[in-house]
Image 1: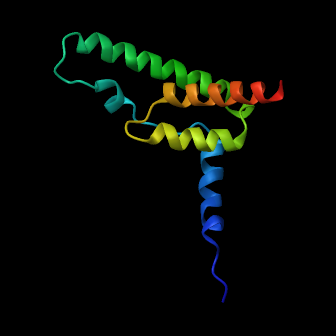
Image 2: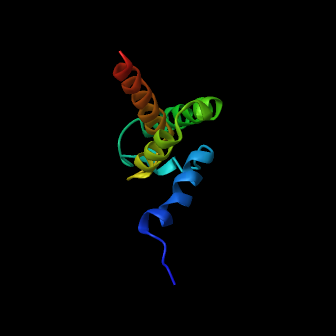
Length: 102
C-alpha cells in the first residue's frame, strides 16, 4: 500500500486558501494595547480599515495568482490575523512580479 507524499497532503490546504478570502477574527488584532489612551478610537478605526481591506480583497480576489493568495493568507494568519496585512502582501507580490517583467 502506497502512502501519499507529504506534498500531496498539503495540496487541499493550498486550494482551500486560494478559493476565497479567508475568514479572520480581527478583533484581537485591533485590540492591541488594551490599556492605552485612545483605545476606543483606534479600535474602531482599525475595525473599519480591516473591513475596507476585506471588501477590496473580495472584489479582486480572483485577480491574484493562487500561489500568492495561499502564501499571503498563510502569512496573514501568523500572530494576529489581518486583512490589511493580507491585502498588502498580495499587492507587494503583484508589484514584485511586475518588476520582474521589466
